Length: 116
Image 1: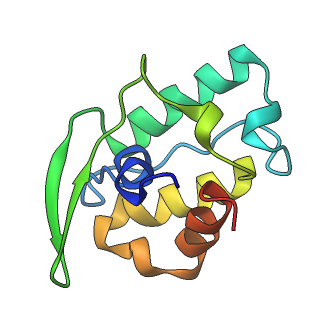
Image 2 (image 1 turned 180 degrees about the horizontal axis):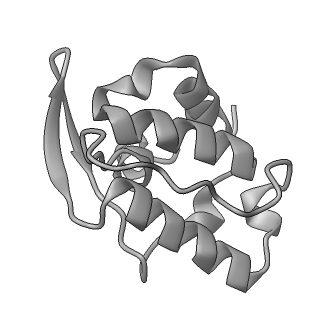
């Protein structure tokens, strides 16, 4: 089973809402695993610029979360059946507050990431 911590590591780096999120310019209905190599790199770049590229620790309701996005090691091939739209929606929520991981959009991401 894939580790939830790995998913959080990809998606939860937050900037505390310090800047505006630039929309992702990819087909929202496309599954991440089916994207071209160029589009996968664009997604990783977008995640790093939207969510940050350094690993940080957050305390969210008693849960310790390690978060961060590494552009060169971004494992988009491990995103299960997630669509670009699901990844984008959760990431935008997390940009405002990393503790938003418990919102519906992020549960959709967790489910497809883990292939439930």
